[in-house]
Image 1 (cartoon, one colour):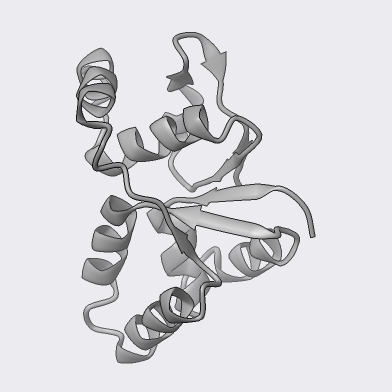
Image 2 (tube, helix red, strand yellow; image 1 turned 90 degrees about the vertical axis):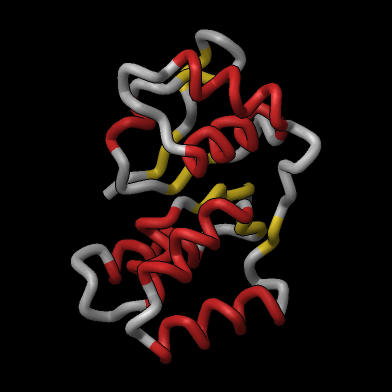
Length: 135
């Protein structure tokens, strides 16, 4: 196991729902990481998408309870988040995406696990390509 993985909503839901298209990929992606991190916005999206899957919701609560998923708060970062969302209004950038881009700036060695091709457009610290893990 090595490195930090910043987990987006798509891979998180795919991990917890076996019928999801990228379920096996998500399992493999998380298997090789020592630290798996996400933010409140991603959790909110994931719990919403898992609302009809009690098993998936329970598994996500378990990941948080047993610290296998680390939650990092971006409450002190509203200006940085709004700046990112303003910069990428043409995409448009969701709040959760802005949070992950900001986390990639704060944890510079991290890789973002996502199913969202918009991350190929986003840049951290102005012009730096964000390291991605995608299927």
